Length: 323
Image 1 (tube, helix red, strand yellow):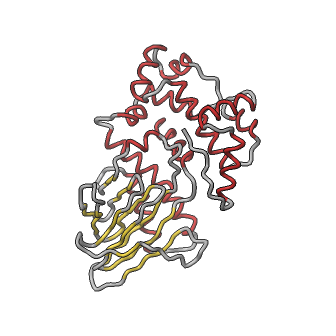
Image 2 (tube, one colour):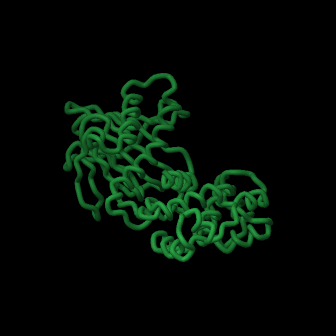
Image 3 (cartoon, helix red, strand yellow):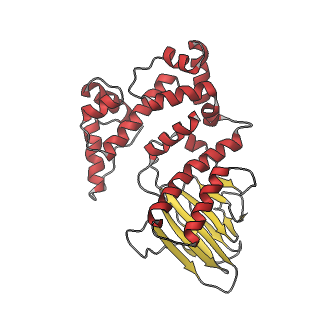
């Protein structure tokens, strides 16, 4: 479906590193405190039960059962425990192999055992896709027979890998964890499909969703509103009104936003010359690209790249603030 392609692109543009995860096997009594992170935290109950304990400004606690999944959208501090009143210790996974993508947490005890997959997706917030802002603070997806078959299959495969580690697991687990975020967002969209709102409406709308998919597939094309309306199967005026109503900005404004999001990612992750980056997103000259980039970010693209490089080398002077 078209909206899934837009989701995949949006997450790829936000990603700043590989997902981190930890096989967490605990025996009651236990409680784990998770600190604030710059990303999105997630927990999957593979076996047993536990409680998600809220921060002071959130409702709860929420009991979780096998197959349940929670996603903490803003990476805020939270806790998991075998009982709401359990004392908490810091979550501090151990890596048997520094090169392994999967850590390990084990807590011995006389009580019932619970197996969890706990981790985080490293997503930059400077160019966060508007859809992410519309997610609830905590996305709770309980295991339901007949619902979210793809997500359930991913959880089952992860559970099998964690319960019985075998050769190749270090390659399989990160890929499954990576794909799981898209399954989570897809499941959330499916749950909203009866009464969609905001960006969910845009992605699920056949006309606007088709136009968004076209922009994401061909960002360098010299799109006009009329061409996008043809793709959407609507008249120019009807399409423009529908796009603004659902997305919140005009079609060509979104096109520019998406081009600049791609440019930032390529400046950050590639060594491509500025003129090459500009051409790949639809600018005919390095000057035109630099002018558009500076209008969006406040600094020229070359200076932005230098700031990213300094930070990676340990110079903590701030990267120029994104718009």
